[in-house]
Image (cartoon, rainbow over all chains, first blue to last red; front, side):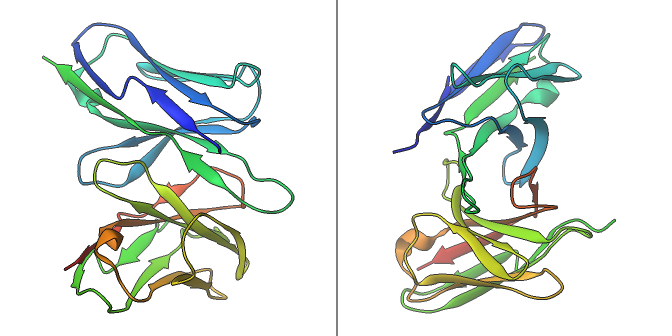
Length: 113
Length: 112
């Protein structure tokens, strides 16, 4: 059974600190996405990672993908309160014309002032 | 550019009833996917439609069904509602079956 696990599930951190969220998946894929969800809201696309070694950065967030290790990371640099949200990774395991897209368990981030 | 819109935003049904949720895809997008998100959980893939054909399905029973129309809008139908169907139902559109998803604000369904 395919699993997409995120670590940690909950993260409380001080403003200005750095931290990394991990996304591990159990099957072959070279397409991974990161999304942000604010409480009571929908999901917003953050990063699209489409090959081994892909690295994308936007502001204080940087995402990377290691398809051999089946691991993606979302690194937060000098956290600010506005980054408080739930972050999801999602793995695209579509094959043979059939689509399937699996979300991780989510990491709830709280940045304390 | 109009984003993904869903209706209704909130609705309450009773067990055994049927519900239809609607989604208008973003301009230029021909693919629509539906997800169920229970409180505190990640979204669970229900199915995807590409050019009016079902293109993939998650682990949901047949009472979850859908349609995609020629203008690429879509409907999710759920029959014989159960209490566990209470969730946020998210629609996402994309320019192709495997690609970045753009989500609507969701339809929150409560089953009593």
